[in-house]
Length: 82
Image 1 (cartoon, rainbow, N blue to C red):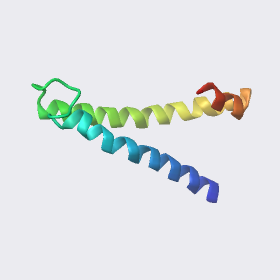
Image 2 (cartoon, one colour):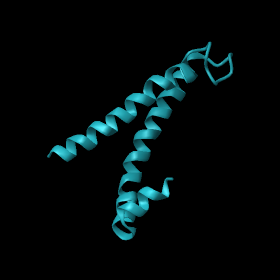
Image 3 (tube, one colour):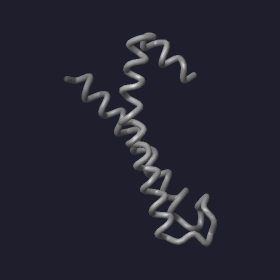
């Protein structure tokens, strides 16, 4: 049970680093990467969309990576990201 909690902790820490970085990049009009005339509603929509895409990609990507690691080996899949 402890390894499962460790995996969940690492996943939460990864998301906790991204969420505070996206706010100034997307929502704040002074430091945003979006054009200055973008409305607050559009900024909030893009912020929510970027958070949602991460969850959806994780949901669909985890089984694919799990199948690949079963076929090719876990070390080979981890080394592919380097």
